[in-house]
Length: 196
Image (cartoon, rainbow, N blue to C red; front, side):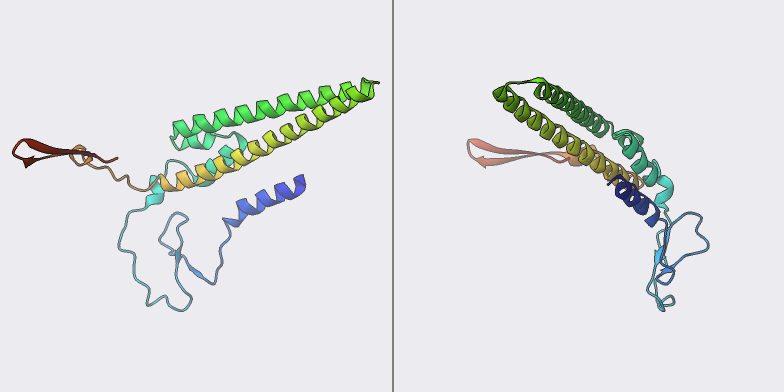
C-alpha cells in the first residue's frame, strides 16, 4: 500500500513537468515556464498576446514548493502564502486529529492487553468490544488527518498560483453607502449598504 502511495505522489509531482510536444508552442523569448497553447497547424492564425504583464513574477512562492511544504508540515504552505489564519486552522486541526489518533491507539493497546490477561469470559468480551471501538476511532482520526493534509496541500498550491493576480481593491467610499429619501410628510426612508 505504501509503495502505491509513494508512486502516486511521484507521478503527481513529475507529471506537471512533462509537456506534450505536438500540442504546445513555446515562445523562445520567455524566460520562465509559461507555455502558450495553440492548436497544431494554426500558429499563423493565433492572436498575439496583448497584455505584457507576467503574473508569474508576482507569485509569493512557487506553487510546487507550497504543495511540498504542506505535505511535510500541514499549514507551512499556507504560511508561505501569507494566509496566517488558514495556517493556524490547518495546524490546529492536524494537531488535534493526530493527538486523538495516538490517544485512541494507546487505549486500543491497553484494552488488548487487558483482554489477553483476563480469564473471565464476560470481561474478555467487554475488553474486546472496547478494543475494537478504540481501534476504529484510531483509524477514523488517522484518515481524517490524511484528508486534512491533502486538502491543505492543494489549498496551498492553488493559493500560491493565485497570489500573483492583482487584488481588486475598492475605494472606501464604494464599500459603504447611505441613502436617505423623504417617504411622506412625516417620515424618512433610510438605507445603508455595506459591500466587502
